[in-house]
Image 1 (cartoon, rainbow, N blue to C red):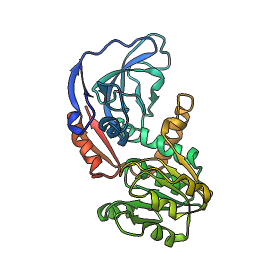
Image 2: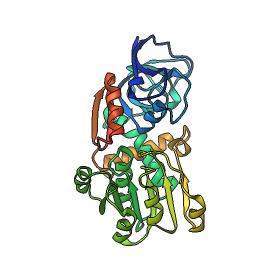
Image 3: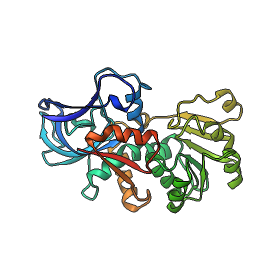
Image 4: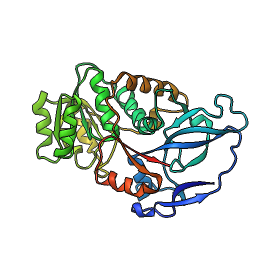
Length: 318
């Protein structure tokens, strides 16, 4: 038996239901894992609220870390007791689960399960953004819209470690006070007027904007870019928005709407994760701030995301 969270309709956090279910035995190519920590991501709220339509009932969560408890037939690269994590497999909001072994990434001994659950999805997203969507080069001026969130924090640190000048934006005075101690070149607030002009006042029009906020910031992102710059639209924390692609084309701005699975897959996930772990181990990605909730408190965690209450990552503890 296991406890898990499912939804039977899409809507507010109140639709998240904690229930007890029976676990099946792992089939060919599968393993049974016991979760020690579960990552909570903004995309979870989009599956829950109906932004993305899903078949109902739906098992919530895409990211977790834990320990292998049982190995199914024809799984040779994992054994009972191995510590593993994954970054995109539905059904993560659970104490235990059966999962395809191919989705799992072995965790190094010096990375805790809580760190892995707070790092894998967001860190691999950051990897895809600085290495694939726009390969950051030394000397570039980079804006990260939403630098206090889980992805934004890692992304801004990673861009800085690659030699870019980083302008980090945050949504409040309290968050600005926190982020100003993280070593970025400039910290600006999105809740103050004339954001594009304040960005350009730093060092002129910028080379690339990674926009994780969406509706509130996308116009400012476009107007802060130099002609021929890159706009990487990687999130909509403030609501969905559609860019004026004709304007972007006229200015020679490359517009990239991205998702992690576009760049990270079964063929390269171990390579990307190894690089992520190494950069984290070096300290290049900064400290990993974690906010913890119990599994039964998943609705509270979703409310916290909507309120943009926390910096860093949120994890559920079974």
